[in-house]
Amino acid sequence: MLLFTKMNGAGNDFVLIDNRLGNINLNRNLIARLCDRHRGIGADGILLLEKAQNRADFRMRYFNADGGEAEMCGNGARCFARFANKVAGAKSKISFETPAGVISADLEGDLVTLQMTEPTDLRLNVPLRVADENKNIHFINSGVPHVVIPVGQVDDVKVRREGAAIRRHEMFSPNGANINFIEKRGARFARTNVESKMKLSRAAPAWLRARSSSPQRKTSMGRLESLCVAATNFRSGLRKQECNLRT
Image 1: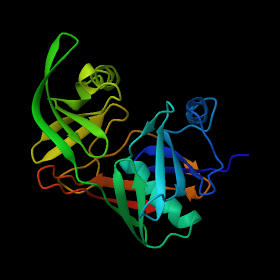
Image 2: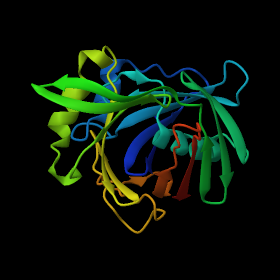
Image 3: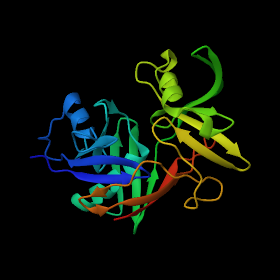
């Protein structure tokens, strides 16, 4: 029997498993089966809570729905911090190891604040040829590689098709990258990525408003709603993310 908790952070849903005993071994095929929305639990990914190997309180391992292990996931990390607080009695300030570095989290009431690793490898205005079309992209690694593409209208973007083509481009091989399309609206941005569209809503601060189109899901810890905005200043290196979590 596999005990798990289902959680949702900013529209992404995750299966979280306590593996501090180290007796749970998930291979790629099993992870993909568990994340299958028709035949399994259904999730965007799986998070394992494990004992730290170095100086942090815990270790976080993140697997995408296809079974591949990734460096980290921002939405998943917020859920992970709350999960560690619930099942492992973590304090209001915790840290956890990831392949992207050590991430710290502050838990105060319903608010979870992450201090993430510094972004690296900022590249602006990179020409990219995709499907006989020239695109102008920006790139940054925030622990996970991200491609940012300015567009005129986000609603006109065929996110799945265009995002997948860029994600699989040889420039980002073999691991790919997260693809984000942004539309500037005055002082605001509407953003969409390859997995979910983000549209303007009243939930977020005035300079950036987002709502995930992914459905909210019930968890074994109750319904976890999250209204979250990641404030990122690439040039100053600000990597603090705040998310309001309600269980």
